[in-house]
Length: 252
Ligand code: BTN
Image (spheres, rainbow, N blue to C red):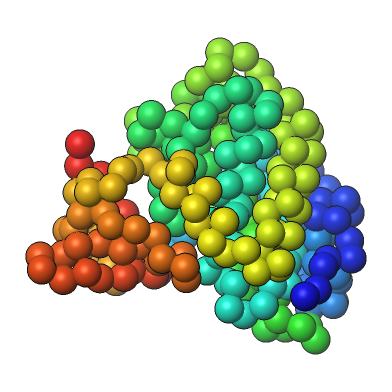
């Protein structure tokens, strides 16, 4: 068992503007920084989302942060799940809102996207690292979102009707991430998966459409999240596990 020496988020690099907090954090990994260090930016000019997408990062509106972690390789798939749990808790502390988790990377409220998680592995430096990026829509007004996602995205300010404090959110997020990360390195994967399943944005037996690999869409019924963090669906007569996939549609 190894416990992190530095608490997550206790040391942070803050920028007015960066291309992406992922890039700066990856440089820290190359320089052998210890795990736990955080990189924050008020604005990103080349924010990245999953599947090669852009993460539009309106200046001063969102929490844009990357954390350097050095988990065991077997735990790589668990990082987005525990980041989802920690983000959910931080939002609950700050606003009392109950958000849901759309496997594996999305934070949603009533079907609209409130934030996203991006994990990138880095083999540079002496010990393999994961850069965990979290983007939360905090004080966005509807017009702060680009037109193509305006109908699909929301923010804490839009939902709660008031401006929210990003600093308090960041503080809660670091603390909550630390607790879930400790749970992971103590080997309690079952507990992480159990909690993650409690907050999913869909239920047992619900029909889902997933993009299994680029361009390959499969429909199935939700069965479980397995111990490796995979989505288990009943597809026809088969039970199939999906790992690097994305949910395209949740049928009501
Ligand atoms: C997604 O596509 O849902 C994941 C979005 C992740 C965005 C965050 S913002 C902080 C960090 N820096 C980036 O460039 N991306 C992540």
